[in-house]
Length: 400
Image (cartoon, rainbow, N blue to C red; front, top):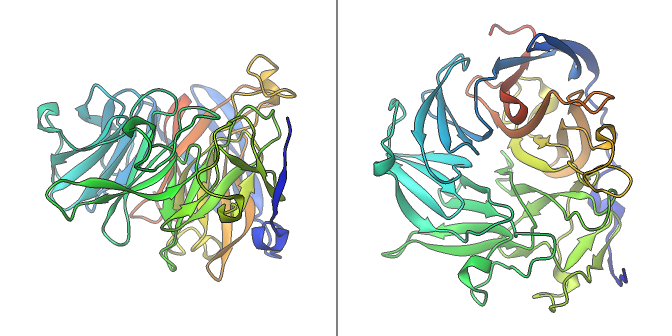
């Protein structure tokens, strides 16, 4: 494939190797699931536990002000869990894909493939009638990456992330494109008029499943799943800083770890020049499938975690060396949790946090998807396959 060198990006600006902070020291913890023990690498002083394996394909989460946890899923169900989060009930079952949820005063927002929906809601409510769920604003639907991630920003506005349908799809968040082709980035909902309208916030992201705001700077950061057509080792997966109007290049440009290159898998001219592409602030090895993102706002887990971002890596379906799905399962990228370290409001380095979800044989315990910090300050994450459930990482010295 012909590639033209377009923009050199300083490794110092990438901030991946310049930090001198040490990675969290890890120890081995055995966790037993369905009668089998799995040795996992977990930070010293913290303990991992499986709270329930009775969810069906759980995805992103939302904690309510009263501590109740809501979980979206591929199964069409929205799950409701009260502390200690070991039993789930069904809040509502829908016909589409309720991937994610967001609560704001008096209503629950549910992001599905074809639209953002709402229902009148209070945190103590135990069920919602599906007939009471109405569309707030249509979203571009269609095949390919069908998840839609919703969150309320520090500014009180509603944001939704959505991906393009494939590797090289001619789709872009711009009014010049047909509605169902306005994909690949983050939208913000304008509710100032009589009818809510989507406005592009950040564009050029292939599949940004997770995003969150830094607790101090209030800047948005997002994970991004890169394309599969360049093999097993390129391009790296992104962790990007998103700002109003930022352009991240895909599918027209790819960052190879050092520079931005034109990807000639799409022949249509790029909507913006390479000089306007915002490179990622951190990267993960290719085909890692980064999912949920959550910043740690306090020191409950330890001072070394405060104001840093936790990212769920789901691991690859592709195998070495070609990246296809028919190789040895043991060569797939393993699922994991990682921490993106921040210093003075900037991403500095990626640290391993929890690993061991994939054994040497290729057998997997879990594939992390959603991550969230609970009202207790502990880290919660979902797994939508192998073990379909909810895990928690908490200090060993704290009561459950």
